[in-house]
Image (cartoon, rainbow, N blue to C red; front, side, top):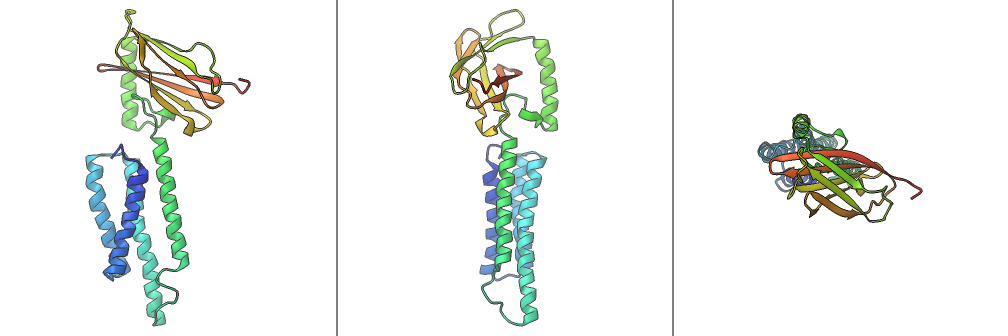
Length: 255
């Protein structure tokens, strides 16, 4: 489930919760409270085993739990209010079973669902190696990073390079990384990934592989699309070893 967008798991699950409620309430003609309760229980029975098998993290689990629960709960309240009013008035309400005010609440709830899913999805983007951009590490990832950092110091690889001169916006220039071990021997046949993260607009962020052009040299022509500061994350993986370096580059408005 970690590889599935929240727009599918959260948005799709919420729509399924709506569908279950409507089936119980409109088709089976159950009372709103009963339809809401059974709908919530079914959503838990579906999601809990999947969350256990593919643990997404407590933050992602919590937002799924809240939205799946509040969807049925909210619909139960809306329909219960209508049923109570009908019993008091002693007749069917006019204008259909669903008033425009509850419909507006439902629409807002769906919109909020999509917005929250988008925010969490963006927060989880770009995780090359151990490091997560903008200190978004979960606790276990941070601990792994500390262990990895200690191994890097002991390994003492020498990673040099980047752009030979300050990059220009929209101008393709070679980004070159040279990797050697502590004895000065070229690190060949490694998997090298590069993440370029814009401080101005996360939609412009890029992630790519750097092919090996010669022994221990990895390069690719890259054009940065925006002015401002960019964070650079280079992850070099060789067998069981993972080496991560970070840096920044500035694209000046004058360029």
